[in-house]
Amino acid sequence: MVTAILSALPEEQGGLAAALQEHATSDCAGRTFHTGTLHGQRVVLALSGIGKVAAAITATLLIERFGARRLIFTGVAGGLGKGVRVGDVVVARHTLQHDMDASPIFPRWELPLRGTALLACDTSLSALLLRAANASVAGASTRFSLENHAPARIHHGLIVSGDRFVSTARESALLRSGLLAAGHDALAVEMEGAAVAQACSDYGVPCAILRTISDRADDSAHVDFSRFVRDVASGYAERIVQALLPSLPR
Ligand code: ADE
Image 1: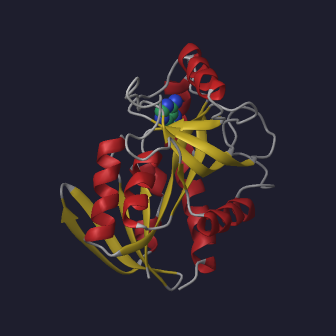
Image 2: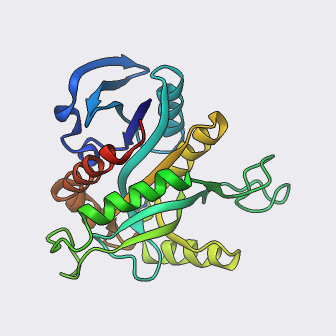
């Protein structure tokens, strides 16, 4: 079975391409796809590009052209939930597109004609990803954390996606409180996950999404994000994916 490993930025994919055995590359739609094996699993690695459209196109290509039958997204996100700190990890239980708004025809955030705002990630794949994250991050003395020296925590819940880098405390507070009023307790915000989840849902391909918190989506988000992506992100992605792959069913 082919497993796709997808990230938005090269730094989020770490040294995984270099670790592939029987490594081959092919280009399609302006993207480079790396195929090979890792821990005995057939994998295809790709960068999604940034934003929902780019990510949906990449996910579709991974499924249609490269035969991906499960998809793992690793990358960074802004922390929204209380207690979701820089250096923590969030594994998505559900995703939601926070910039979807076809109201008043459909309720705010609902994906038109799907009857729901939420797209669920695959339960068993997410459980394996949580276990891999726990094994590789939690408890490690966290040189990973930029905020303080407490150990990184692993969270499981809602990740929201939209075509905006959320970079003020005011915007992130409004985003969080608006969603919370509708019963959606968002832990983290990023720009691709819900699009990948929608493509996977349409194809019936299981997906799981893991995001490391690079910033708090506040006024210093752009500085924290750049620093985290430069200095820290690749270490996380590589360790977690390397811990995950041996546990995946063949
Ligand atoms: N990815 C990482 N940080 C983010 C933020 N603050 N907003 C959107 N996507 C992000």
